[in-house]
Image 1 (cartoon, one colour):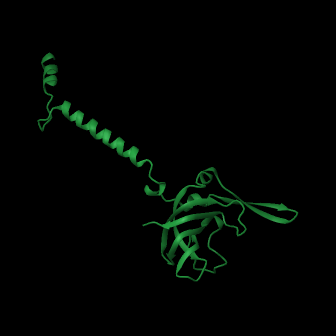
Image 2 (cartoon, helix red, strand yellow):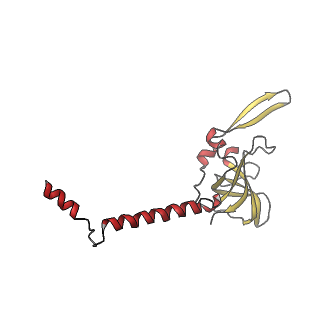
Image 3 (cartoon, helix red, strand yellow):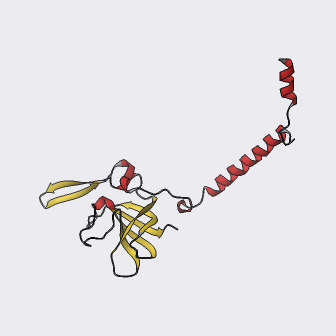
Length: 173
């Protein structure tokens, strides 16, 4: 057993001939460089990082609570905690553009989980499947799916009955 232990102690060279001690030193340097890069890039804006898409399945968990008042029925959105946590954060959403004007370039439009090929005033799905979008620059209208990023706002009392708004929206490139 002593001979085996001595052999292990004596065999301190890697197959390439480099000392294992010097290889350990190189890996420590790589680790320090990687740590420095992570610290340096931590201050980048949130949109600079690859962003995971917010799913319609998540957004559609919101519901509407109906309350009867002397003035009539009142509908109030109810957002689960998972959605409340997204309020004010930068998100990415993919869906179908529903224009709010006849312009080729849209800066204010809706994005829906479903294609808007029906009547403009009768949108597919419910209010939890549509997001109002306010873009910082015009986006060409398309019937194809689009992906956009922006700041998500939860709308607790929107006069149009919308539940979500995306501001400072930009197309995902």
